[in-house]
Image (tube, rainbow, N blue to C red):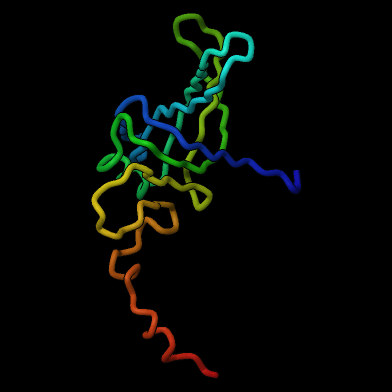
Length: 152
């Protein structure tokens, strides 16, 4: 279908430490459980209410898996961008078809940003497929070096 979009953006907290597994092809995959919450004031009682939704996140991107494994722990506040994916599987105990909807991070359409403040070292907390492999030196390049080769 032309003109369609499958994109999910979430800001939430991890409910548990990330689960890192090895796939059959030898690559790693990370699984996260992220909670998002809504708060409101009940009009009839005046009482504060909260509703929490849990989201399953699966990360296939090797660079993001490494970052998640090293730096992201239970309770961490994160921003993610990915795609919704529903997979079908058979429950071994009942033989019934089951469905699971997850947010998948893979390819250039995905990113993970750690929102918790760390030390003030000036480095960005943004990690994404197309930015995760940049060495720190390339981020701090002097802009005057770029002006030397301009032909006009």
